[in-house]
Length: 240
Image 1 (cartoon, one colour):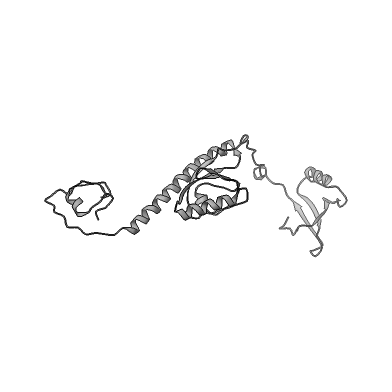
Image 2 (tube, helix red, strand yellow):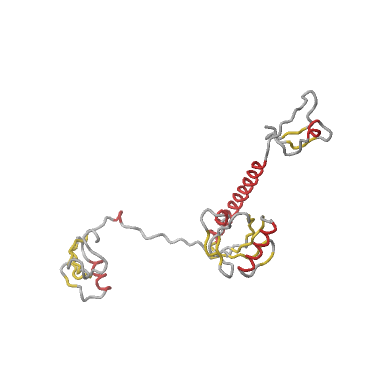
């Protein structure tokens, strides 16, 4: 219709030579359904556009007819159980809450999105304590940050979903939680690496070092009274 010049506001006035300007929409619909194609139709355009447009309706092969979407019954809606998620307060959560602690927005690629949290989820508690307001949550977060207690657990109530979706969310949340924990470990290891410094020690290879190394050349154990112990080597040191 657009290719023929029809625009929003146009009035279908004639079908196959029959004036339909005074017909009800149901009557026009029935005429179109019963008419043989190709069929000539005439439109009166809206003000400001060409006065009239005439075109032809052509038949569409059955294989090209769009099929209606298949109805899928996912079963009854269920409320998933609350989930307790580990959060890192040294990083932004990437959430906004309303006064009832219901999540309004989740920033893309944020800590919250990686944990699988979505809009509509509600915060129930923090570090084992129940919460009733956004002000209470904000106060507790400030206290933990001031104390340096940056690793905490936050309990959420997910939104109601279908039974099938609840299973998917459970698996996704678990996977997201594992990914978040892995990222936390990577950040901790990176911090350790930044604080490392190299120390050159002279050792006597005619004597046992007294160190048990792991596969990463880190000292898992330093024997008391050994050459390494006398040199100040400690568990966790790595030979480079």
